[in-house]
Amino acid sequence: MGVYMKSATRMICRFLILVMAMLPFQTGQASMIGTDQVNSAAAVQVDRTVVLDYLSRSQTVNELQTLGLDAQAARDRVAAMTDEEVSTLAGKISALPAGADGGLALLVLVVFFIWYFAFRR
Amino acid sequence: MPDLVAWYRCARLTAGVFLLLAALSGCASLVPQTMGLRDTWPAGVAVQTELGEVPFFPQQDYQCGPAALATTLVNAGAQVTPEELVKLVYIPARLGSLQIEMLAAPRRYSRVSYQLAPRFDDLLREVAAGNPVIVLQDTGVGSITNWHYAVVIGFDYPAGELYLRSGETKRLAIPFTVFEYTWKKSNYWAMVTVPPDRIPVTATEAGYLASIVAMERVSKPHAAIMAYATFLKRWPDNLTASIGLANGRHTLGELSEAEAVLRRAADRHPDSVVALNNLAQTLSDQKRDDEALAIIERAVALGGSFAAAALETRELILRRIKGSK
Image (tube, rainbow over all chains, first blue to last red; front, side, top):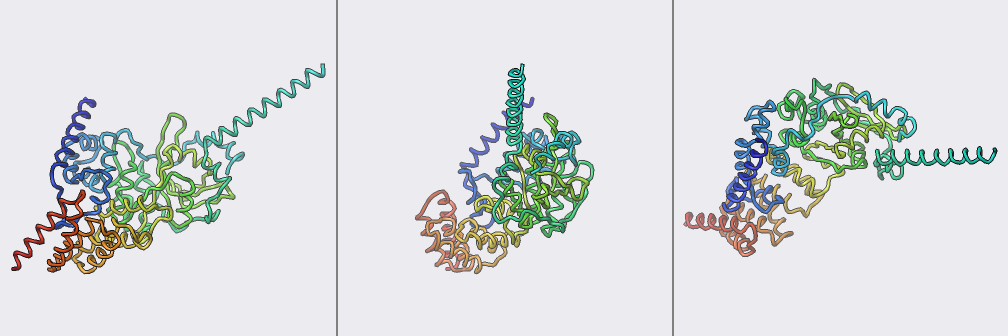
């Protein structure tokens, strides 16, 4: 199911980008143009709320939820990310490194013990 | 047969030399940046430093991410606890925290997070400048991975050691070689969190601007204003930062300050539709629609990818002029 889900979400994503490209972009306050629009590398101005809505319905939030987060927490976390970061994360949460355990593995110390004294700088 | 003995000794010596060379080149490729430091130590950086004031939060369970983040955030003046950060960066089923979330969470506390270039030099320069650095290490061996966040708070190059706040250890001394071996596997991933009135010493113009723009999304407007103002002191010609500073002022209703910033930006970047558009909007919001109309006509004439926004602003100004008559 993973493959089908992925291609399905990819389709939806492309469709949304196309739709958004055709829509005139909205600005938050009157008609001041915002920095994220000016600084955006992408030619298409992606509306954040659309991305968030998309994410809330997509596999990504399901993934976060199966990983133990509720939908609201997932949405809040995504709100603090840039578009680039969101797209990096989408569909890859289980594969990316998650820093967890403390301390150094004993094996590392053993392997490097002799080396430490030989080449410690 | 003395000849044979001599030949044997010679062969043994040759083999020994080969083995030593192989071992040396092997080490060099295992920890290339540590080897690089032997040749060139980063200019202007003391060989020994330690940020003893940096707080320490012993990690609970698998929560080294929240602990590491609390360490640098509290050091940057934020009021936060690791428990609070668990909600923002910890993923229960992964028993850990993702790098992207580590970068995203500080923005909620109006601190700028900046990912360093993957260089030992940059790590050392930041620590020497007083910024503790969060690093992602893999402390596993071979195919076993064991991702772990720690905070580099100092180093002593003559002694060959770095000092880390790590896990439940307040001051972990670790050799440069071992550190690089564990750090290399995360592609030398490292980040700092700074208050908005401070720029990391290794920051690049484009990279740091992106960090502030990312923070602006969820931070307090005052923090974004301060970050842009600080940025502009260092890179005064940056257009996006000027826009950001002006937008922050505009949001707070400080229209004349916003106008001053935008006028300067429009002078320096006469072809910027965004600067002209936002200046026109700011003038119009001060009920100076005739001035605004002259400015927005310039923006509309320039066209480009923001032409639609400029046209919209002109419509608005024309409506306001009509309404006031």
